[in-house]
Image 1 (cartoon, rainbow, N blue to C red):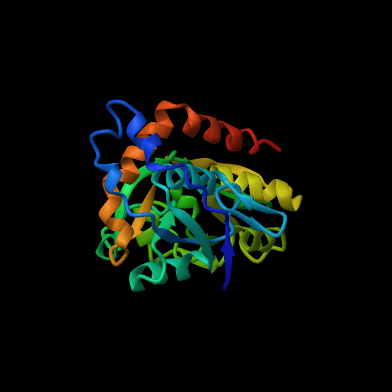
Image 2: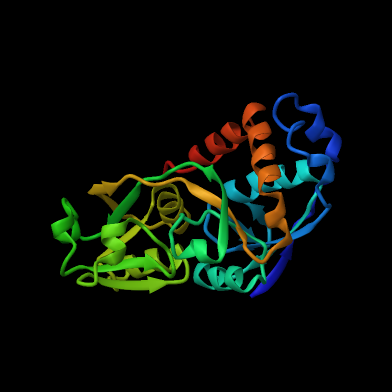
Length: 256
């Protein structure tokens, strides 16, 4: 793992109080100027962690929130499954984009469903691995992200043969090389990864509607005290149209 420090921008609490009817009632004048550590994995276009580019939809949106709270942000990179463990231990404060589950609620607080839902798609190369219905999945080798949740029936189905990897880039390479038959991935990240790697894959007719992804705070983090302030800052960003602009910016990158 390596630490990636992104410049924290301090906009000052006055910006929060300026917004009538949104933040003025939230008590944001008492928000402590924290330095929060966000656990992130490289998962473009949500979280882009490269030497020449440290951005992505989730990072940019959270930076906007931190800006309004006067917080400094630093990012700790680790595989998705490892970040869940760091959240449990309180070694990172925030996680961007997890789905809400009862198990995860034991050690993190789901503060705001800040990120749009995305369909779960089934990608394939060989026509024999095209997935028309759920009953086509048994007998296939299915690539999944370590620690990720997709949908309840699939997650709990012990009869399926699932092979995990730390990153979607790895999974798509496994698909190209025939090590897995199918990869299940959120629509935006799946299409982005294929384009970035120049892999020619197909999308199965079967898809599953997605749930909204969350900003989550470790139950051991001091940032948990400011859950209402995080939500209030997000409302301000939405009202200003910033959230919509960011979503459109990255959705436009999915076509290939």
